Image: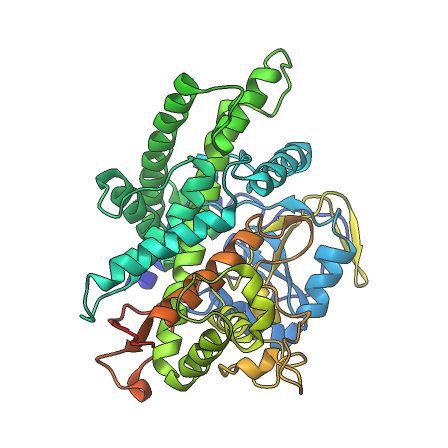
Length: 495
């Protein structure tokens, strides 16, 4: 029903408003082939009802690894397959380092912040963010210690349930959010903190809305759909509520700032703002600060928590794999200390399982859009400056040239003949190149420590038999979300 209403609205209003306009922008250069676009509608009629991802994968089969799709009136070049994505984002990293527009977010972010900026602004903010996040916590505590503290809090919280079934979404959100909060805000929050819970609820609801069909249609026709009801309206409201919260935290930091002892990312940024206050062209301004914090908090919370939800749903589906991981945990870590990232090198099977979970879950199948920063020659084509480019990360994570059974969950994809961890060029859950995920190392440590500490302390059980557990995500438009489920965390009795 939603699709039909949106399609009718698109056809009717679009035809009336844009009949006299050009069907698509004229570009110089030589773009890759693709389906023939209709005036104004672009390739809407070739879009699969199940979302953009399925449409792009079908078009890859017809046009190859590089093709052009018209999202409304604008041409976008799609990059599919491991070799193609790496050739663009790594071999020609500078040319492909621009940031494309995400229509449902643009009215709020407007090109500010470390994730959505482009050009010199992006380079300055990324350099600052990398250095600042790497140094945390400013001589006091490492990120690893923050994650271990949160893991211990999680274990204590899970013990309170005494093996009763629960939906783990909320707790996984809490531990992921608290890790990034400790870095950005300088504090963690109690799992019952009202404001904290409201913030997490906004993150979760916004993530679901961004994957909706309504949001995907907005991506195509934002120019006039912005005047009509839709998911984009609620996304705007949610993001502004989050920005208001962040703004209050920034002001609190400003009034309690000690220049000799910065506590977190916000303090460090405020000190840099003060240092450059006489520079009228500085990128260290309030807008870049609040949008950067929003971006880091949102990405750091939602991706890690959703990966954990996928992780334990998969473990319920394949209990023999969970048992093998527990055996390795018992051998390497034991039961009397918390896991550390250093344990990972001695636990190849566990590491392979985590890699395979990230590959199979495929949470961000369509990476954030890029934009070429200059006229760029690529595989025999000429992409004019500012052409948008979508790296289809799912096509790498499911690349049959690198994974023997791409649609099957199998940790052997990341193990060699000797049982050692085998790296793969196609493992791109964090994307690659100059704009790969800022928090990759933090996320890797979180996933390892949270995964191992849970299996160290608990045996998993489910009200549903393994063979009846469905791993199909709720949607696969621009993101994949696992179905809600119940899980029992039963305390392990280890001698």
